Length: 313
Image (tube, rainbow, N blue to C red; front, side):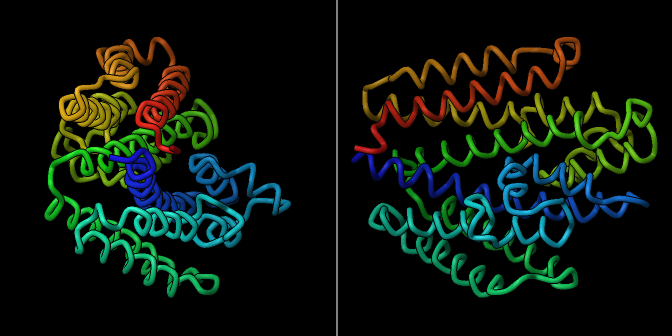
């Protein structure tokens, strides 16, 4: 496979995953803002920080408020990570690699862009926002279903899956990190009703509320939630699950190509370094430090994959 084709598949999948994750963050911001009786700007600031777009937002706006934050995350063309921007980029990449995709996958990606473009022609008001975010998640599920249901399990599929799980791991890590250092007003809030509401919102932001309750019941503690989102092998958005899938798909590429670049070993190192631990050891080390180190190494792995498979040649 040409490197440009591999890169197009990888980034198409990353952008689609990012669109869904951002939509989930917006839903979470809406819920968390309702728990604040005074100033919801802190909640929207945390959402912007989680999405990695706070600096860009502040370069355009003087202060954080709900309407501008929602527009920046959902449809602002000046934000390259807005839902509308990344879906447009996903479609662009899909068009470049169209011959590698099934008719169903291409059709789903193309339809996603057309529907989101139509729904975001102008600012979305608070009343219509839930429906637009639901549309984003539905379209993401449609593309995912077409991919799983119609694509051959070959190198094309592997590059798509690697892109998906690199992006998903990055998103889960950012959510966990910001939870500890932005969302809680003070250390005294830990264990309070406010803290529990926010933890539940964090679980919902990664589609993990139902799965968590099946595993832990109604008990909500920072340790259990961190365990679930970092180390649970069954939770499809946990760091453990994502890293395992990256490992698996890189190993399939190694078998297909007879080539094991540094990225293959880097994925194994990432898993061994961060996911062969107990949650108590992670808390003792420091969750913020742990997540920051993980995200840095994950970014390094992503860049190494691009080099190994010559995405830009």
